Length: 452
Image (tube, rainbow, N blue to C red; front, side, top):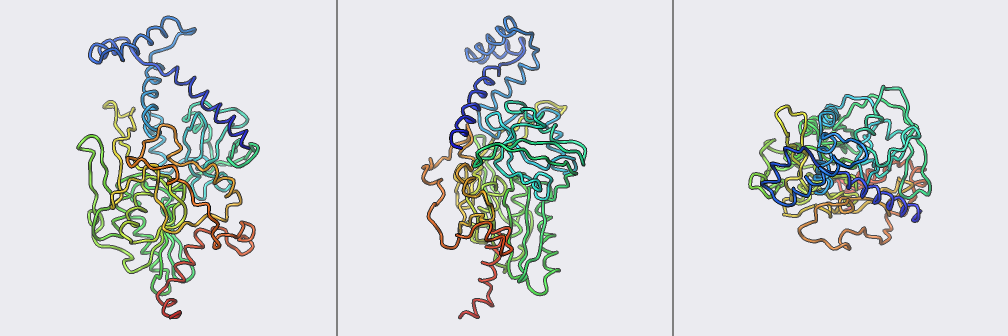
């Protein structure tokens, strides 16, 4: 397996190098003007442009070179900055609205490969067994490695009821394997809830799209109505939540905090330094006397980390699970013209938890580390788990974290020795949630009094 992964990584580096050579600019008139103002560096770009136009084996139109220049500039910054044209902007809007037909996968392009960030819960992709960290190499037998992400996404979308075959490279497996997935209508549910035994509520936040704060408030009210008595505990589940709106992260945190800082963002420009405090979105608090657990994992990123960090720093909740992804940066969508058909998604600030900690690279460390023992591939996949610190060109934490500070604690824990098969026999298909629920049940005031 190690040999296969080395080949895969080497191929990715090679493809990335070849692509970088083609990322050259733009129009003659535009660069002539820029060259006069900006000096010799732009002169190199313009000279390269002239050589391509004069000597490349085929005629290349200016639009392709302009797009290549923009993509190249943004790719040199960090993994989260990028260019969005009309179709990409439309896809982003559609994803937020949640009314499209496809596989229900959040994907990104990493070293030329389409990588699954996370499958949406209840989606065809999740039901087919696809997992965060999987690489998609072929669609219906056609190689997509080294291609365009938008093109791959458009191929995966399609009419509900139709099928597509994906070839998957999964870290931890010796060989790639095929999975056939039937497309469905993806109705994204940013917030879902349930009431578990012992009057413990569970609210799962799957993404931070519009009105998530209000949706969580409604979920809490529904749980209170469903409970046979007082709600005795609450679990907020942010696992595999890749993030979203900063404003919604603030709104959600404000539901559970009645004072103090929620998050701050600090950028190079003064206008990008902003402080967000409690009581600015939702006056008062909910579940103020209810013990809370926040669940996170390696797929919890960005807005998820903002909420987890705020509730952890204010000691409002116990954070359980695994180290989060570690995306501590803020992206701004900047339109390039009045038509609003082209935009740059640009990293403009870093964000910090109430205690002043940046989660960039290191992520949020859980108060109680709980592995997902229900995953039969846990041990193999853990060796190749990717986080922000593994992405090429990621922003470096200002505190210069040592590698050892980012490593997972490998010591055996007697609480976590059961296998996935043994847990399945006990009827436990989600060990992390099971552990959170059992912890809340054990720490109910009535149980503590009974033990005393």
